Structure formats: C-alpha cells, structure tokens
Amino acid sequence: MTLDGPDFLENLVKNGLILDSNVFVLWLAGQVLGGLSKSRRLKQFDSRHLEYVQTLVNISKALIITPPILTESSNLLVEDKNAHRLVWADLIRRLIFEAGVKEVLVGSKDVVKNDAFRVVGYADTAILKVAQETSASVLSADALVVEQLSRVGVPAFNLWWDFPQG
Image 1 (cartoon, rainbow, N blue to C red):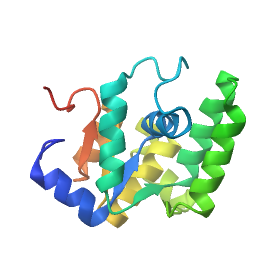
Image 2 (image 1 turned 180 degrees about the vertical axis):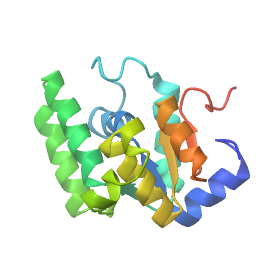
Image 3 (image 1 turned 135 degrees about the vertical axis):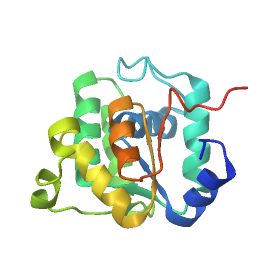
C-alpha cells in the first residue's frame, strides 16, 4: 500500500483518516490562513504537503480526531502566540460542533496498558488504538509513530517518506 495507491485511497473513502497533531496543525493552517504560515511548527512543510493533506481529508469518509490530538494541536498553536490564535481556536470549536469531524474517545487505561505508550507516548498511542478500532488510515510526520502503527497492521504513512513524487 502506498500513499497515492488505490488501496490507500479506497481505505480513506471507506474508513476515514486520522492526522497526527503536526499534520492536523498543517491542515488547520490551510483552513485558517488559506496556506502556510511562518509558524515554526509548519516550517517543515511546503505548499505541496498542505495541498495533499487537504485532498486526502476531502476524499476521506471522515476526519477522525481524538481528545489528545486536539490537546496537542491547541498547545502547539498557543505556543506560537501568532496573530491568528483566536481564529485557530474558533476553527477548532467549529470542527467539533459543526463540521462533522468524528471524535473518538479512548480510555486512559487502554492507552497506558498498550506497549506503544512507552515508545510513542499518550497521544500517539491513542491514535493507534482509534485506528485499530475504526480501520482508518493515519498520516503522520513522525517516523517512529508510523513504525509503531505499521507493526500492528494500521495503514500508516509518513508525510516525508511516503509523499508521492512528481
């Protein structure tokens, strides 16, 4: 399965997409700013990454989030103290109440008893658990997270390594 292959795309349409926190912030930047900001959190991405993530979100059955994704994302946004902070916060609020984003909860005990917790931490282990429950694909910018997800059969892709060329 490749990031631009038919199996991956079929899985998105059928089961949805989970974005890790950094990729979720990238997607939010596109929603709020219409492009990339000068945020230090986004300097690793370029406009091709943003366009690709926006396309994947648009064709997926659902954008799936967890409370830890929202917590990490809002913390990343607050740290930057940029002029768009209130707009970011309003967008997150709208996503939760109006935009049909699917929020999936995972109990803390289920997260911390998973072996991945010791390797990738709380938020990413919650992503792993939700991906297993929903069969959703995961898009991350963290190689260690992708490795952990792939080990347990979750269709996980690294926005760096698996990004379609050309």
